[in-house]
Length: 154
Image 1 (tube, helix red, strand yellow):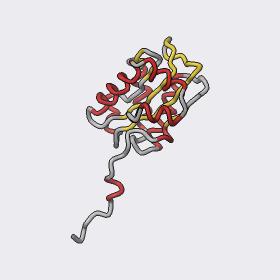
Image 2 (image 1 turned 45 degrees about the horizontal axis):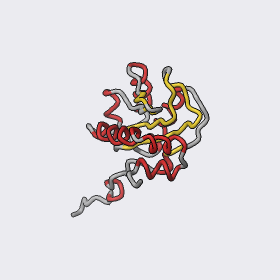
Image 3 (image 1 turned 120 degrees about the vertical axis):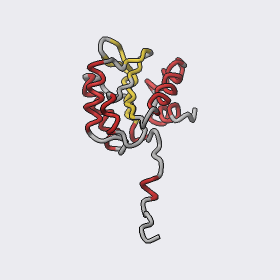
C-alpha cells in the first residue's frame, strides 16, 4: 500500500489517432521530409522515441512503403520497434500529390505498432483505401473527415 502507484494517467491506453496528428492540404515536399514530419508527430504524441524516425527513413531506403491507390504507409525497420511505446498513426494529405519513389501519393500515414499491432493497423487502413469513396475523402477531406474515416466512425 505504501508504494501504490499514482500513475493511473500514464497507464491509460493511448488513442490510435488524435486529431492533432492529422495535417490536411499539405503542399508537395520531398519524400524524406514527409517521412520525418509524420515520424515527428508520432514522437511528439509519445508513441515512439526519436530514433524511430530514422528507422522509418531506413525502411523506405530498403523497401518502399507505397501501397497503391495513392497511399504510403511509412513505418520503422524491425530494429526500430524497440523505440515504440504505444501504437499510433499520424496522417498527412497531399491533394496535389507527391512523388513517392516514382509513384503518386496523396495520403501518407506514419505507423507505429507495438508488437504485431502494426499488421492490424495496416489491414484496417488498406480496407479503407480499397473503398474509392473513402480514399477520395481521405485525400481531400478536412481533419474531421479524415479522423472519422480512420477512427472507424464513418
